Length: 266
Image (tube, rainbow, N blue to C red; front, top):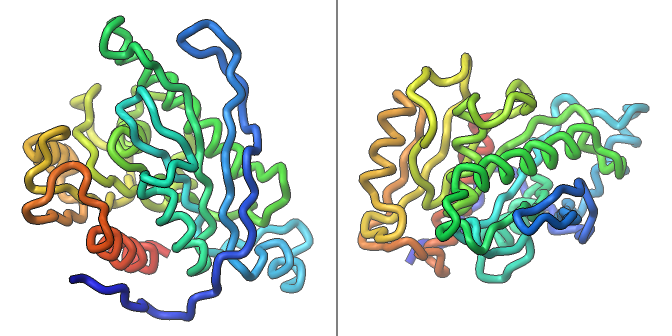
């Protein structure tokens, strides 16, 4: 069994969790205005206190550890920012304990996405929501100490498909501040759907995880993604595992490798 290993530094511990903060209101597929919310996992050493004591009057820390924006899975049909079964929740809390604040978001879903022919539009709306959440982090309205920090976009399953297509395909949205993104993490995702264009200039490397026996997002699609990434992906195949491989052993692998990646891209 894989075991957690410390990769430099010392664990700070998870500090506070700020829940159900509204970052946007948007009209969903039912024609209703939906309140979109996020949860924030902060390190034990509160970012605001640390930056104030360092004499940064505007709260900015250009050298600070990046903020990880977590996007849950659920096939665009279901899922939640706080769902116990989604690996984004546990990873966000564990990595916040290492000093990397996490922001877990809800986004617009569509229970009829595979019935009403609205897959592309549903993807587009979710991408718009993620972009709005990223902007919320960068503007830091709650004064959490995020100003000046870089972003890592991370997702599981459908969430992974969303963050990779959002960042690496300029067709999705034009408002994303790509220069503020220093990393992308893809857990059990898919390929780039909408473009044959080159990757954005100076695109950051993507950390990819995929089960070799995945029967929901086939490994062949990840191999397509690797070809599309043209050498800018760090691939981690998980032998003999399907789509839902994030048990204790799988989570240990994710935690260890993601922590290494975060040290590499700082």
